Image 1 (tube, rainbow, N blue to C red):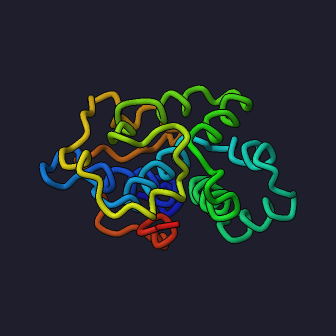
Image 2: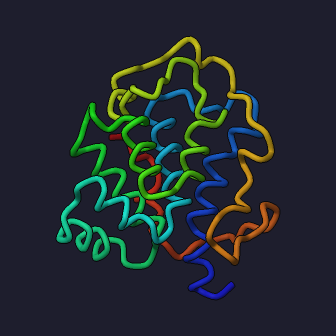
Length: 187
């Protein structure tokens, strides 16, 4: 795979790695940080070029948007993820699923709203008014003892904007991208 193709498919590979718990019993995300990380990664994976429109609707300045571009020059998904991370940091308890779905609806990204409302995000007591930041203040929720119910449609990456996705069975051995920005993010 050419270097640019590898960079484009990196985020999908990172998401497949994240979703691996869905096929491995006992490996569901138990910590609130893991759940937040997965939610933000899924949203980021689907935003594509819409991340700048989302940023404007979330009241980020042109300078802040350009800073995100400069810090993450090679990946729309990394730019999207960093936008969400900065939004959660900036808005704290006001960075709720309801707030995000409202803005996503405003920019006509109902596809992502549908993902956020789907079974992959049904972790018991996580309601639409609970903030992304709140998930870091909860250590263990007994409702989370079992893996979430997920269908093949929920884990499909067919809707991804990346044209050259690598099939699940053919993952490259090495990816020439610093994946630290997308892993172990806990806000």
